[in-house]
Picture 1 (cartoon, one colour):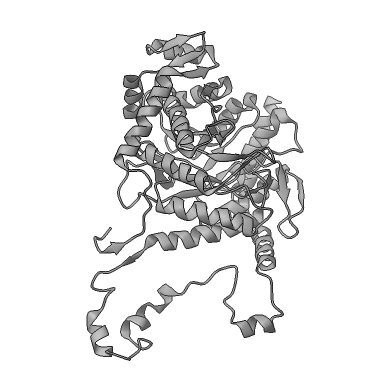
Picture 2: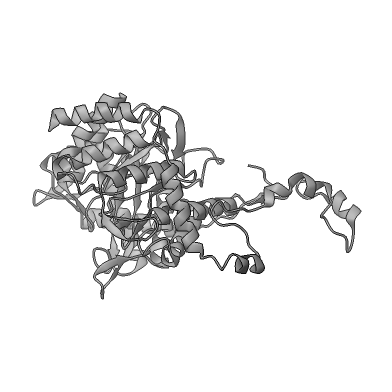
Length: 479
């Protein structure tokens, strides 16, 4: 990147503040500790000389945490299903690759919102295919995260069918959330059967949550062990609600969540050294009146602070995605999208995997996904900045046109005017008169129709039928 490139950036924490959060996080782990529910996981912590009380309360020491931070890879390459490198996450990459936040649709919604009416219905396997193809068609989305839970299938096999539908309907990388714990390893085995090894060019990224505050539950530790043994990268995200599962103040929430992430990074490395882990937080507030989570400017700041802590540690980051408050592809959703996506791209956020959920991520909205795609596109243009080198500041041309002239016919205008036109693929540019002549069209209605048309045109990859047939045979053999 040229020294004469002007690019906006956003920094939250200074060096002293980072050190304070790190120090206090280590203090939490050394004095309060973290509850570990799996006896096998506790045994691993003991093997690495961690003090254990009451059979499950583990107290990691500073030196061991710092060892784990050094062992964890500082970058991870993510590939498409067909083996092409899609992107790299982590601070241990080139300057040109840094601050390129990646986005994904999702996540595990129970309902599906009709793209035209916003009416909700229970999420089904057909919706899984629709959502995956939509995410595949939208250029600004880099990954497909599990968009919903297929409620038209028995729980014991729903995750296998869902994972198969995702794999068959896109070649983009997949962020995998598994609701039924007994399905996790069979799902990885199915991917291995259909694709081969998952560690050399990983296109499947399992996603795990500990329990806040300060618990590594058995399901999470079991899944981490199954993933790390295979040499696969995984996402370790905690979810804390300030005033409920986390302290009420943003600073205390950030510190507690950071302590939990350090414990997870440590566990990944004692399971297997050099395991790639992508860590981060999904911070939220808690609405005492409605008894539900909410997203505020403060929770977005915590997200940025967490990204900076992971950058400081040299750990690839995954954070919150600006979804939740919308009722559809509306002003409520757009407000949060803009606050999250623009600040993420300008900050140090690595991955925003869960875009498109409304009503506290209960309903998957195709319209919201399409609108977010436009927000991401605009945010990336903004964050790209501009140049002030000689070819971009033509002093001779300015001199020749002089005072009171115009640049309509200037050589640089004729050569480059197309670069600076900002045309939306969704909405045409209208004057007031044109808008009135068209009987005052509503922007939301246009967005909904555009989304519906995009869904109808979105086709599966050419190997869709082959993958579905082989996958169904695998599932039939299991159930």
